[in-house]
Length: 168
Image (cartoon, rainbow, N blue to C red; front, side):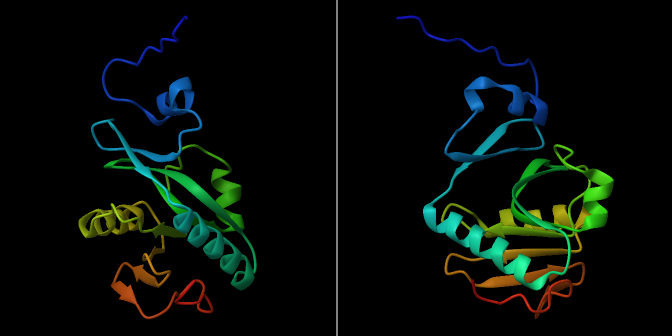
């Protein structure tokens, strides 16, 4: 029986290397790159996916225009991160289209926690997404509770989507 071999590029991987590599297609994991170009994988549970779906649907209910998207790649100084859900305004979409990865973060970036996530990892993602242009970063915990963050820190509610529920 023949086995397939796939060459891996020398040195740090780019996001395009990840997208193009046949062995990395259709994995049941969320893939990101760290600042050294190394792959970081996180398995996603069905509960995680359920919260992503609820967030997307709720965003479409409370926002007037724009699009929600899941698994959005964003280039950051610490590698390519993949936000679980984002909200892209019509203006953002006109400017950046489907650029992959986005060099500028969409207005709202949402992370849905998994049991393997560390608090420091989420704090770092909040800082990275805000530094790349996000206006808000939301964190959905393991029970579906949503926290909202802006440049000033945690917010009681979303400024961009004030009707968004605190529980999904």
